[in-house]
Length: 209
Length: 211
Image (tube, rainbow over all chains, first blue to last red; front, top):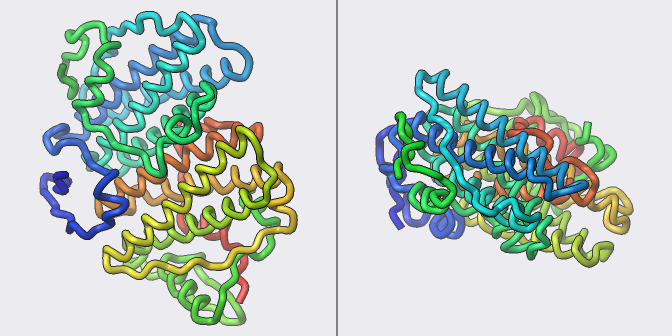
């Protein structure tokens, strides 16, 4: 693994002995060239949040959930909406241009409770890995705090949806004793099937397909 | 608020010997447990701003909370009040907290620091013989742990340590959500995780230190 970490334009070499157990095998930031600025990271996150927000909007409208499950997932959808709003605001505050919402196609995801929740589970865990993988690129501390705060909530979503699906506690509800970061390439690869067109990702987006 | 519920104001920390107690106080002083820490008849003014920023101090702070959680869940599982899905959901939490203790301990050592030793913890009578009490206390702990980690996000200087801490924090968020669900609470209390300062968290987790 490449142990070089890019922060503020410099590459810091972390000694190989540093926290081997915790740091070496489980934590890897995305490739150094993935993000050039906080705006890049934010627009990457915004694209994923748009995807999630629209996913839950459509899914919750499909009416395949009921009772406590429906309530939980309504709240999750509202969280994603809040993330979209907060990240959009932040991009504008730092003088950037928020990406547009991508065109999406969730196929038959809302045909049943199970397919809705299974897809949601994938999205949430993807989001968790994406935030963790991108966190090391964020230079502004306030943005970092917000991104971390969102990351934690995505982890909550992932756990509850995993539990709703009755998945095994380990590797279902929880994904080990630490979260695993995902780099941009693998996140985009996982998200691509739900994006209706590459053209939706233009306009200064950090995300290129 | 919820902090008071944890131990009903009872002492939760005790130490095997005077040296352990002093070690803990030394560390607690470094990270700043309140403006004045009065224990065992003496008081000292806490905190040096310089050391408060230290990543090692933050890691030792996290380690202390993880010790607390690991001990808590070990006793809780041993208490035998859980079964079925609840047991299946809570057992890995115990294992995670133990893994966090091990990971933080080795990381602190690798960074040239000295890992704090585990304080001895004391819980109110009946915490582990009453399922509801156990799970509700666990829920409070998890929410406290989440806010503790998030309260340090902007203070951690080494980006790799930040990543490792975040990787743990995310798991604590999962725990918090599941325990909220098990106890009829709110798995998603807000769209972003809240924060608490070290001072706030330690005030909650260590209301009293027994000599």
